[in-house]
Length: 388
Ligand SMILES: [Fe+2]
Image (cartoon, rainbow, N blue to C red; front, side, top):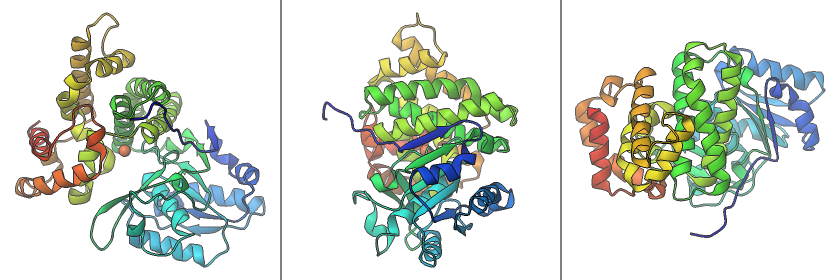
């Protein structure tokens, strides 16, 4: 491991209520004139896309629209968006939506300058250039507006492919909490828990560094203090604002320190059983943390003290145990189901365990965990999560 950290960030971050209304000045500042707006049908139906289009039209900006992004984006959906790109003369991409739309747009931006199928560009291929992307997140969760990654499912094989590179880091992110005010309970909970995992995993990651530590700790404290409020009171503006900032900070933290075992074990639940990303992380969060605890006791204790679930005077042992207790309490309070309660068939789960462990290890994330598991230990952990 090297002594220095490498940090990648967007060139512009505009953060706060109304930031998305700065789209035209942002494009102008970056010298971008012909954007393709990429979003999903919900954003079109609820008028968020229309609001951006009005701003572009009022400013005389020639733009195109692709509004058919799908959840868990596939290579087919990326290809459809690329077809729209090739029909116009676009110099940039504006990405509006949750992680799925942002990842689709980032993939389009990277593939626009290249031929060939997406699978040619999965990790470890360095996707270091692409069209400029201006990202406007509408959930407080994935952090995709600041990361150098996109997850795209291969339509032919079903594999969830991780693609990474500097070309996938948006040049600008307009982080506007007002776009999250209408998020329903489950989405607020799941995306917030995803952010909490980003911050916690980044802090205990073997690739953590002093830069990511500070943003990770701040993000997890903010999430801990506000997640219940945004679920209970969707229109609570100060809590929404806090969660939106924390989600972007969590994104900055994991983008530059990596996620660990929770995300590594979570991706197969999405790929094989279609559990939404944030929810599958949340199902794993307490048990994976408990299993990892003793290998980074003081780091987990820092988290507990910073979040306020442990007292400053608690020993590392006591504080770290309180963290696990707190995470169990939070996921239960936010009605996170077990895999069985979610509806996954017990036999299908047992049959899939070896494949899930293989996919988890192949993602590379478990190797950044304080306690590095082998396939047998991952299977045992999945069993524990089932029985939790
Ligand atoms: Fe995530």
